[in-house]
Length: 406
Ligand SMILES: NC(=O)c1ccc[n+]([C@@H]2O[C@H](COP(=O)([O-])OP(=O)(O)OC[C@H]3O[C@@H](n4cnc5c(N)ncnc54)[C@H](O)[C@@H]3O)[C@@H](O)[C@H]2O)c1
Image 1 (cartoon, helix red, strand yellow):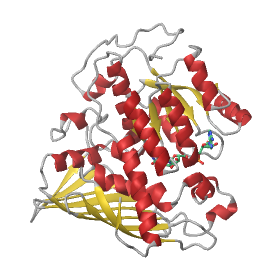
Image 2 (cartoon, rainbow, N blue to C red; image 1 turned 135 degrees about the horizontal axis):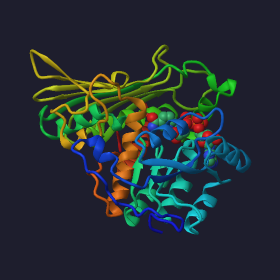
Image 3 (spheres, rainbow, N blue to C red; image 1 turned 135 degrees about the vertical axis):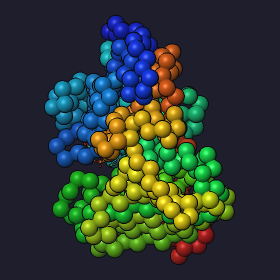
């Protein structure tokens, strides 16, 4: 089904005023995109609400429907709280769309990992664009199937590696691709947290409970949950792939069956070495995600907790590039994602919103609307590579760090 429905009156693509800046370009449409969400609702849930804010941040998209929890009754109740149309499960929501009873332009999947695949596959089969949470699926086999399906059906699909929506991470990628730091010799990427330094899951804490449960999280807790963010920093920014890994995964907290500490040495496709690490037991650390990339002409350094600056070292002096709408050093591809002048912070919500913007641009462009090009944010290719990376790391660690092909 195309991106319209029987109740729709505004034709897509009736642009009004194409402005000179990215901000005006972003809001030239009469019709807001309609979004559905799978998972993400209920009192204790985390990232669904972050998506809710990211969806509405630009005024060009709105959440209209959801199958927000696994229990049908609770799912409908959660939808009432958000003032959207509720469904007991994702299949009913998709069927309502197929029957023309509701309008949807894309769907966000914000369930724990084990429930990504079936929902994503059903959406893609039906031709529905998807913004799916990471890690992409529970297993490598599921990711392979999903990635084949997305390629065959040519359905827009973005994987929510939210940090890649930070304009300074996008700028770092542009610099690397533009040859600014030369050939890459070494990469360090990390995600350091401390929230699972003790057995939080034993208290029933929602996010800790499913992340430490192999049935709902997959074969790796720390690696799958945040190691994949560090993996994407090392590969998506550099444009390199991981060829093989030597890994040591640790389980520090008693009673856990999966890793809470994840350390990988990787050989990259150009022969460079990458140290890709993640941990949840570093007491006091919150969301210390970042990377350093060392090339033959210079080095780049970025920290998620100070996301508005990118440090570039070229020798005797260092340069800090500050985020700010209108700054001339941003390539056009990144500039159109900035919203405010420097010093008025754009951070966590805006970064996730930028992934929604990329999907929105793909959808509008397919609808024939004139939009700035969508940035090349992670999709099924990166999702599958991340799953294979984690699987290889788990295998290597079981073999006491033996070099393992990805
Ligand atoms: N991109 C990021 O930076 C980022 C950050 C946090 C979480 N995440 C990802 O988002 C997803 C959710 O994580 P969270 O921390 O928000 O978890 P959460 O436990 O806070 O929320 C999960 C939600 O899914 C619902 N749910 C569970 N099973 C379901 C099912 N079968 N059908 C429908 N709904 C179901 C729950 O009721 C809850 O609303 C995970 O895949 C996680 O890896 C990504």
